[in-house]
Image 1 (cartoon, rainbow, N blue to C red):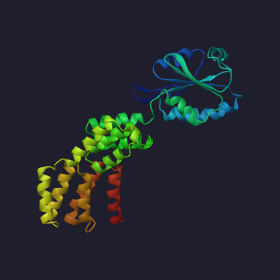
Image 2: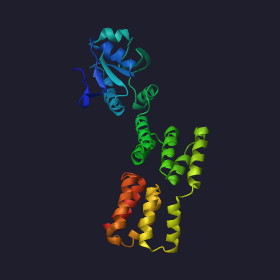
Image 3: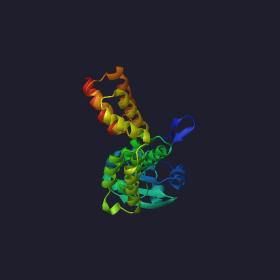
Image 4: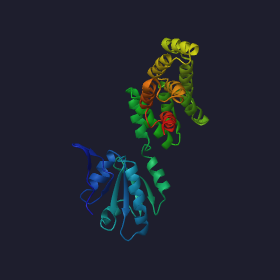
Length: 298
């Protein structure tokens, strides 16, 4: 079998290899040199080894899932007996973790996926951490909808890990999605509540108590006096959306659209759809109000 080559994601930009078949000529490059950059999981196997064949698809799956965070280096112990001897391999399959040019951990014999994950987790960031980092960067760049979508996925994938919850809740507060932020904060376990938790609660409380923009306060007063005035409703919904009160904007618009979807020659429906697009069409809030519209239309 030929060694696996780099796959190209774009001209001049090679993605890290997931898996490679080691030869004596490439052993130093793949096992020593590569482990100075990222962990290498060395799989010693042989054609006659049944447990090796059962283990192989699990290893391939994890290598793809971690998307280059580690290199899966496959060593045919029969063909490369000197190399297997150097690593002290006495039974197959044997998995060895290489880091900084040294073997740092190992597993022998048939292993369930959970055991291999536990081994990898000692030396690798969790798969969802990349989404946390990318989501945080987008939030910092002002791309809140995209950032929150990534953070929500990481929050779910991590089974509501506290380290993700803090970043996710902070982004929700910045987007003024305060009810959602509060739910995320309340779900943080007591064991994970420290100074960061106290700070986040204070951030939420400040946002909850913050005065609304004067133009919103004025329009809300006008709406209270004339709740059927469509011009006031349109202006208030636009101000809500502009100041990131997206749920208030959608709820106000829907209170009119559910009675007449074509009101104001479709102008309010257009604003409603614009707000949904701003929130992000895969977002639970957007989905909820999109479903209301579809139910009315169809």
